[in-house]
Length: 263
Image 1 (cartoon, rainbow, N blue to C red):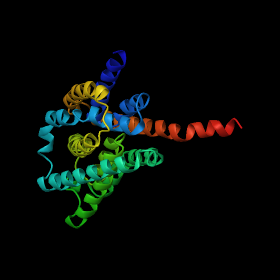
Image 2 (image 1 turned 30 degrees about the vertical axis):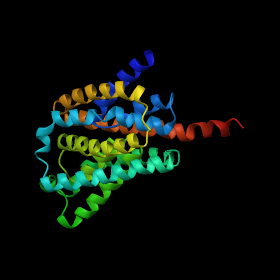
Image 3 (image 1 turned 180 degrees about the vertical axis):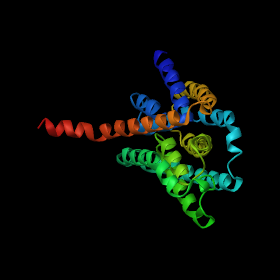
Image 4 (image 1 turned 60 degrees about the vertical axis):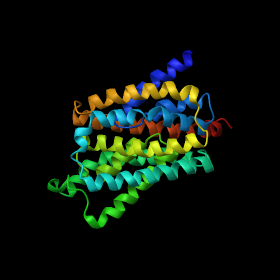
């Protein structure tokens, strides 16, 4: 019972973090990996954090009305397809073959997010919210598709990568991008969870109470999104991003360094 309560509280915190910036999987996946196999931990973590997305989207739906409809549907469909592919890849290959890419992807996405204000200014502030030229829409869809595959395969850090992608696509300031990120990430993770449920990779004993916690955390995070100073919100994103990448760098390479040093 104590374990279930701990996982519930962790899911509340993770859902709140996910709805604000992303990186909530840093809390849920490592905890679950202590008690279940990696693929099951990833699948159950995805289920646990899924309810946080619709609750956060509902709280910030007014910001989504500012997103051009064509952009919204193009990237929503692209995200769903990427989540489907990612979920199937997780089932077919297992996550061990992909883990070595995780810290590099999250670190690179965080660096891009840090550099985004300078990159946006270089394109002219007058065009910041107009998005890319029509000719570059296929490129934008391809970028989001690749990010969505990662999100469907191994969701920890998907928020950071999606925020970075949307920022570089000039989808507006951080207060518009975060709700849009929640919508796209929730869609792709939802598709991936359906695949994982069909293949029986969910641990329901942990997943159900954590999903309730994720729902509560997502609602709280959605309520805070529009009230947090933009600089503070960007700082939260950066801290989560670098913290998440550092964790996975250590997980992959720390034991190897200690082993070599001990020889």
